[in-house]
Image 1: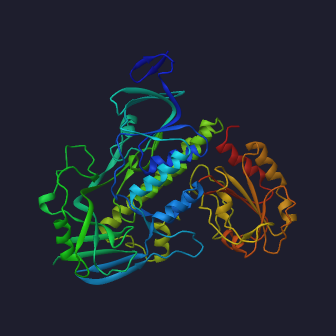
Image 2 (image 1 turned 90 degrees about the vertical axis):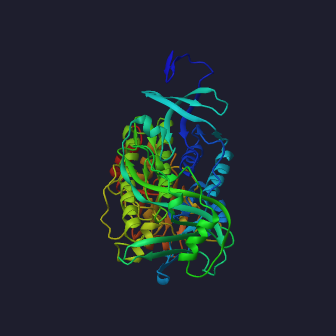
Image 3 (image 1 turned 90 degrees about the horizontal axis):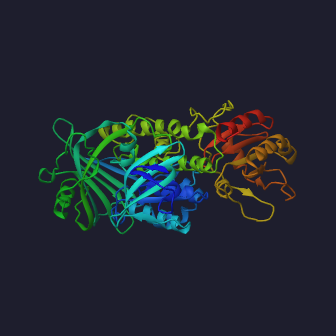
Length: 555
């Protein structure tokens, strides 16, 4: 007999079993499921809603998210559905006060974009279904209990029946009111902004340049903003998601003590006339709004959990951290949570992981969540994403989430000391100009890294003799991973690729790899499944490689 949340149940066919149960089918839960399924891990995804929400809630897609979708095979569909975000126009009391152009270095493969959340969910759902996994809608988590071998969960299905699910792990991606977070007993400390907002998905007939958001504020006699209009472009002709302060007649009650006031609120929804009134006051030019697809009153809180999981149960996305939407950081941060956790869970379900690997999820991602919560609160109350920074280039890279890294994390190896070079814990940058022995066209490094869902060992040498010096590292990697980790070699621009090698070799024809990775002599780079550098190592650094593998893999 086995103990379930509802009591004792025999081990019969009535019990549903899976490796990972994911609660919540928003972008974060769908990402976690897709990352698990493409690694062959069995999972089930449940969501209490009977249908996806057809609203443009989270709309900003950061370049780092595109990079992760590139690795997952989602990128083409996402690029087809999204529209570029080129910048922001700022107005104060009707006068233009600034223009931000969203520009990144030319070596960054993707730029900023807008994509309605329902489109993000559609794309991720379609890719998940190609792996044979369908979201179980109208199914709500009631309770769960974990033990040494797994997690018993009781769910209420769309038909009203209860079902027990036995999983090895449970992941809560179920939003700000997360049942998983509450069931795990995690704290969720923080506060709420006093302001209320209304959101609307509308079209307008103004002549603002496409791809630019509009931020228009009115300052009172005391110099403090007392009116606000923010317009984010969406796919479609002159279509925007507009947000603005709520008029008194639509103000909602904060709710009972202890309730988290975050997201769309119940109660009266703004009508087109409410939106038009604000546009009349604050739009940079006369404009008429129309074709309202959705509207809501919206409240904003800022909170973060004390830990991202316990035992075999984890939280990600809004279940772990909520904050103002300034800079479109929330959903993108949650997607990175899911990717970070999923590759570690995949190793755990395969019985390959060291005990500390799953603990690294909290150690790596909670500091990121804390930084994002603190920064977005400062920006929401202090004038936007550029407040407090004098370096526009740094701001763009930070908001693109390209500066997120884990140098202080438990998986990070000793730093190489090479100045301004990508190192252990940093994002692995892309580069172009890699040419193979057969195809005459160059490819990107990211094209090579996405050929498998595991770590990849990238070796660089000015010639084949330099690559041969990595024999010990290659042997150690193959021995410890049973040949599971693919190896890619890159030759300096003067090296000859003849195709008679044991591993794929590509020529750095334009010296882009050498420039991006700041290397002259033979150097190895172990790239994690989530696109971060695990190690930067020389050809004789076999002990360092072995030490990292011991932190990740079961010995």
